[in-house]
Image (cartoon, rainbow, N blue to C red; front, side):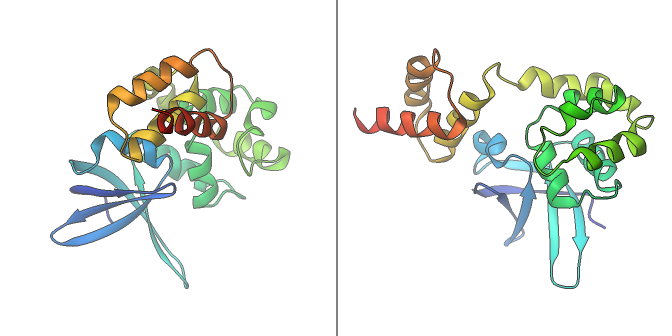
Length: 197
């Protein structure tokens, strides 16, 4: 089993990143590829989890050990596979997730993609007393990284991933800051503003 990979981040797509090491590009499925956009062409260390199936060998990548550990706890729950676990982690609200499980908050948990009432109850049953260490400092850093307006933040990350310079992204942020839109709508508006220059 792989533990982590050190290499150059060469590609960022909406669902995975590619890290090159010793001339080989490794495709890593990650929760939020745009979280890595400021690391494009830089040397990175990404933690790994490998899933081997009859029809596929998949490498899942994680920003840090805490995120990887949370992923392994999630996939231990009946009804949650690796893709679902990644979708749950994509919101990056790891503190909220842990708190909801500990507080048996089914309503909060069903907000995550692919999590119905039955799966939410199973998560609580399986993990409620097993996530104590995740409520601490390790996840506080993730919470601090988050922007108050998550949708706008994601749209701006997407712009950076598309190659727009930081100064243009900042101008767009100022123009869109007062609006409350979906990530998709923010992105469309931002692209419209950038092409009007």
